[in-house]
Image 1 (cartoon, rainbow, N blue to C red):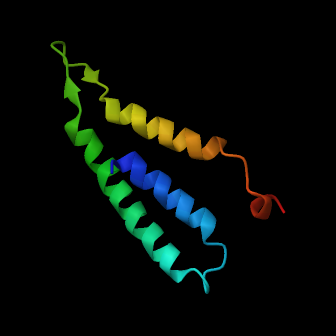
Image 2 (cartoon, rainbow, N blue to C red; image 1 turned 90 degrees about the horizontal axis):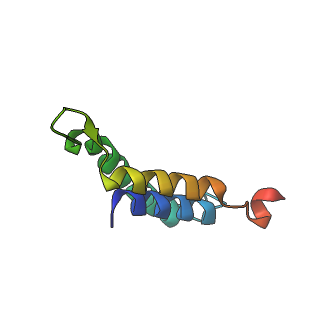
Amino acid sequence: MTGPDHYREAERLLAEARYPEEHAGLLAEAQVHATLALTAATALPYVTEVDHEHRPIVPSEVNKWSEAVLEVRRRPPTAEEAG
C-alpha cells in the first residue's frame, strides 16, 4: 500500500467505526493505517528532487496525496453521518 492508500483506508475504517465501544478493532486498525500514512507523508519532502535550475520537481506521490485527500473530502456523507 502507498501512503495515500493507507490514508484512504484509515478514513474508510473510521467511517465504519461509529461506536467506539463496539468497534475497538476497527479503530485500532484505522490507527495503524493513519500512522503509516503519516510516516509516508512525513518522508515525502525528503524525496523531492530538483531540476537543473534547482526548482523542485513534484513527484507523482504528491499528486496521489492530493487525490486521496480530495477524494475523501468530496465523498457524500453516509445516512448515519447526515442523520
